[in-house]
Length: 425
Image 1 (cartoon, helix red, strand yellow):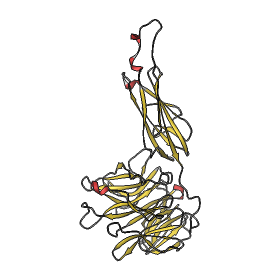
Image 2 (cartoon, one colour):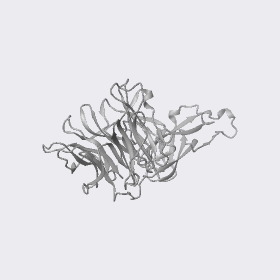
Image 3 (tube, helix red, strand yellow):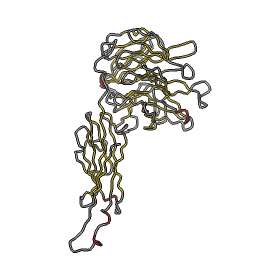
Image 4 (cartoon, helix red, strand yellow):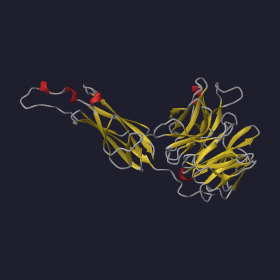
């Protein structure tokens, strides 16, 4: 961590007076900065970090102090968590910074007494990360695609609903295409269960099976941002497993070395991973939900794949939720389907403000669903699978804007069953 602490000792004196007239509250005051919301001193674009000044050595009333915060560049923007603030800003002991553009940034705090004299200052440097984009190279594909299952076959489709293209594979539980468009992953049905496989989109490799974790019950394939690793959920041997089910953890398969590593160990805390996870398009972190058998609570958590660090972000309201999380392209929001307080629909969590789930699209009936809501078109719109309308049977592929408005039908399935797997960005 890059921290620098500069101590300012202010000695008040009057010519001809003794040292008894000095103010002991202003001597030996120090300040340091603590940060939350950073990942290895990195802030995702459009995300927010909170910086808090920790003062020590002040012998007076700490509540009388004020704090002047300053950013060294315009890569960040000071905020009160809702509204932008000028740079510099006089505020409380904590302040937010929103990542506005990529590059290095430094935040400085000055501790001020009641006379606006500077008692101490400290600074903290961090880096704002840009969005990850494969740069328009999509391997076997001409542009970004929606990836889905229609009936028993798997397809891709342009964002405007045109050019349905068969992927050459059917069935399976989950399909993913690497960001560079070169690799396809699928959990395929074997004689003993579902096993994860990968293959090149041009067919040059054939099917490559990934070693079985505990039993063949793999699902939810997702590629890393650099297309070098495949993440998926796999079953593990755990005493917490239900009688007729398995406990799942997140695994990483290295496409270059063939190494398979288990990234999470939530079963040790009596938790199990519920539903599919999502990859941050900015940091590459993994968002997932974990359910605890004893507390019956579901939490949204974040995983750093390289370090294995898991951090709980929030606890969901009581109810059923997560039919696949998805992270917005700017990494500022996460959406998912849930049914909270008997209200089913698509919910959104704002990661900057940390707000509880906000219902942005409500299903018409409790029996309806919005399966696998997925951001696409640069985050301007959300696609999902739901029951066909106008009295038709089966499911269709629907779309709204990012706020759950402007409902459109991308693809009408009639009697076919759709499973939306995500997008090739």
